[in-house]
Length: 267
Image (cartoon, one colour):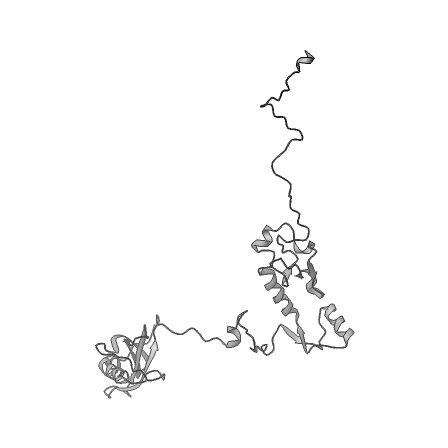
């Protein structure tokens, strides 16, 4: 069970209210933000008393509603204390705090976690995170033989390369994206990209599942596509251009009779 509030401190409602009103007077700075100069005429910035909680045997905090515009659900919290029974009650602290249903700013998220695909513009710089699990030093042995072979052939290397986790994450995005097998276009396609002449297979371990579309009229031109993706611009698509109306080889019209007059000389 919660500890009971000291009766003398619980009764110090008016002392706590006076302290809150002094802090909330026009022009005061209750929360360390720019000075509040809003018009509070006709509305007491300190509202009704909404509760008291113990802070120990000799301290307690009284809560009052805040009537400040823009601080819906916030509360004035006034901590009062006394050294012992019969001693005067003093105010220790007055602050404006968000209540259980207060309007507050969303939880702060580091910038590196707020960036989303498409946010990077021309001239912007976005360095990878420190110890990014998607990258490993280039001198470490990777598990993509095609990449390692090319690096050895040209005598060059990269400082960092994709890690196994980095490739798995990329493959997951591509597989679940607009050019993956579960997209609406793929479900309605006559065939898959893996059998298309415009499909350019990726080198290395990714080549088993992905390639690049090289068909200028296809929606995925120049984009990474799954071998299971497909569209109506598949290289082997054939359209039946014959007439859908059946036509007989010989047509007879018996509604009209043609005749030739008989010559008198022929009797």
